[in-house]
Image 1: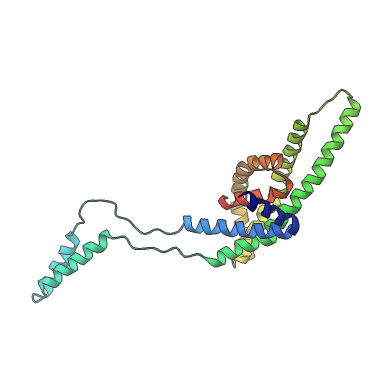
Image 2: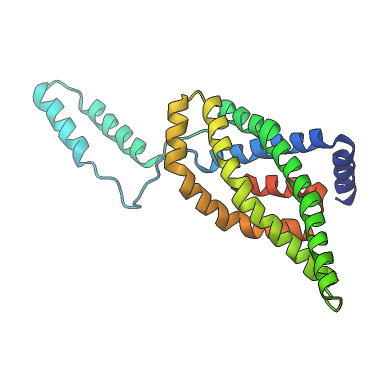
Length: 238
């Protein structure tokens, strides 16, 4: 396991952005396949262990007899038995992957999510860290006795990153997701626009509930190289 992680780390370090894009495409397509499997139609199952009613079959048999007195009784009996057997055996259902939908998710992961996460987290790491350091130096110049521990500094940086991610990145990212996946699915611009209007605020609210704690962990403890990977892993369930 350790050798696999080392190999993957070397892969990300060697390939840079391309490695993050490949990772995003793989995880987004995996998440969509799991989603399709979980939400697949299931075959009906019997709701009762009691013997099935044959009253409806009797009526059919009686109707047949009344219409044709020469109707063979053995054939009527076999028809009733076959009908009862079909009533207690559930229909089999097979899981079929919607490869077009998987391809759409993989394309979004490769072309959008992978680059967006990578560049955004690099931007945050570069500018938030330098900004926080400058502010701290100015505060220490005004108050030479001020002492901020590395732990407190790390928490401040993480909180600022989360705030920017929640209120700057996400309001742009969500419409981009709806637009790109909607158009790739064959929807019109009007349909996509309507979907954004109807679903944005609800999705954004749920987004904040989930991603705020996830990103706090991500920015506080996860190295920059693996921050996009963590987000894409969580996206499997999201």
